[in-house]
Length: 319
Ligand code: B12
Ligand code: SF4
Ligand code: SF4
Image (tube, rainbow, N blue to C red; front, side, top):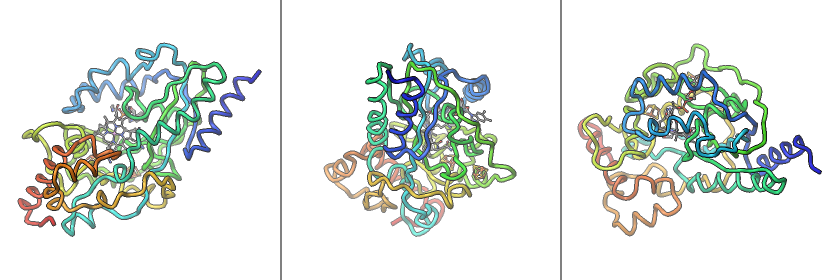
């Protein structure tokens, strides 16, 4: 019979084989600190138009609302950055910027597939397993921090001292009781580059993002025409990388070796005006298997038009 410790080691080894640079375990229970951070985020209304963050409050704090048997989580992080080029250089030359997390194949599919390969070992050993990446209502960064995968930077992201913050997070929830990892100490110190770099001043304070102001919220998540409170896009077509590009932890972090995350040429610094000229069929075909599909053809055209409009009002030009 396989012991509990052996099962844990096998799952962690399988996750590493699948390409997760960082792996660990954590008990499922949320800490008081995380619960308080989430509560004060909502109390201040910083979820902005992302009302699901309010509706799913109870489940995010306790994953057992949806998965009653969950006791522990295997946490994993895979690097996704494939280039050291930065958005400002391309935006200055009239291009629009697609956040690097969306350059390649949809990470939900890639990460889930990798997690499932490791989760099968738990199922074979007679344990329950459920894989999650992004869309399941849990506090992934808080869980990853408790698993020892990194610290929460002033930009709100989970940062590993060697691997930086360009990391996708994923989890396998299980009925195995699992221990927490070793805490990674806060590494921001006196730095505040990310807070200063945000073009729309979306940080209410270090680690506290007002999602209603963030360019990512409006370009990725918002449906329909922009509302009056939407920020100018500063050249960002889909998502935004500014608060990570300036982070010293990302300047030397190893680049991703995952072929699925390599940029599709059409989404690396595209021309917003050329995008507006594409037919529905052309645009739809470029969205197959891409994270940009979330905004859809309509959302991307809306974003491209606003990038151009904002640049005209700032006196610059967009190609
Ligand atoms: C909603 C959401 C967004 C929203 C709102 C972001 C936000 N700050 O809440 C928007 C659309 C703005 C967004 C943007 C981005 N997102 Co997002 N997003 C999410 C999602 C789905 C939920 C986040 C959530 O619950 N927010 C509510 C707040 C209150 O929770 P939280 O930010 O996780 O913070 C908790 C802990 O970090 C902790 N905490 C915070 N500070 C501190 C400090 C201390 C000392 C302690 C102890 C605890 C603590 O308390 C909080 C509550 O428990 C997660 C996936 C998931 N299920 O978790 C991805 C996720 C956070 N996003 C991710 C990414 C990649 C991005 C972008 C980089 C994408 C882009 N390039 O445009 C940007 C980054 C913006 C930024 N600076 O955060 C990754 C982050 C990976 C990482 N390394 O951290 C995630 C984890 C998805 C994934 N599976 O990989 N996102
Ligand atoms: S993603 Fe962009 S807009 Fe959002 S907080 Fe970071 S720098 Fe600001
Ligand atoms: S830019 Fe500086 S303050 Fe911001 S997350 Fe990185 S190290 Fe921390």
